[in-house]
Image (cartoon, rainbow, N blue to C red; front, side):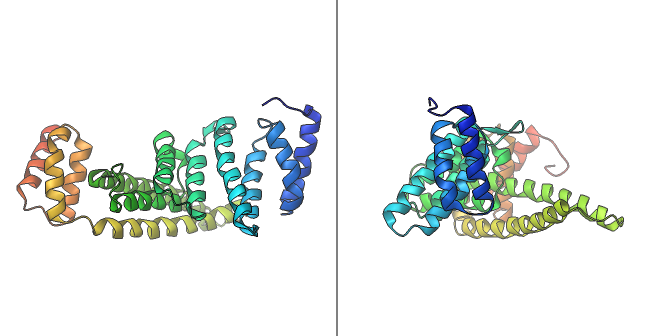
Length: 287
């Protein structure tokens, strides 16, 4: 977009809205913020970080559905501009974080188009899994997939739902390990008698909160999948897909693990899966 403002004017407006936003005076921040967004969209990451906060506040305080809808549309558009202009922060990709936040905003504001929400989460997950790390959004990603499956949407047949469950439980487990490592570093420092900095104290609280959230949301998706995972459903499903996946050791591990977990291990298919896994990746377990 061609800037109607000089670089000095853009910086001035940025400074004005940032100061107002810092003290949570979002009404005062809005106009200068919008000026910067419209005229100097590549000036600063702060335009998008504060913009998200400002628009969420306006959505929350909207007195009419028309106003709420307008600010929500602005927020969803902001995420797209954010990804376009600042896809990285300090050299680290943020696409997963940005688009999972967009999907979450759609859920939080009762957008009814579940397919659009699912596709937004799917885009975030497939394009940048590393920064898609919010436990709540990961859980809602699965919940949206589950809702589409129950609605009979062809985008999420049963096998896709199970694959999504396996992927997300692995992602939750990865997050759990990362959080545990970070907590361990802080605890060791505490045990050594060294006082924690205010940043470390804050991080410790965040890690504790996220650790509890990972456990709670993992339990939620376990409850959802348990309703669909019975031997009568799993055995025909995996039997049908076996030929196409017989050289995919990850698929075989997941299928065998699911059958074993649901006590379907006396089925001939379970033996077939384990034998095939042993031929691909011989181990003491498969033997």
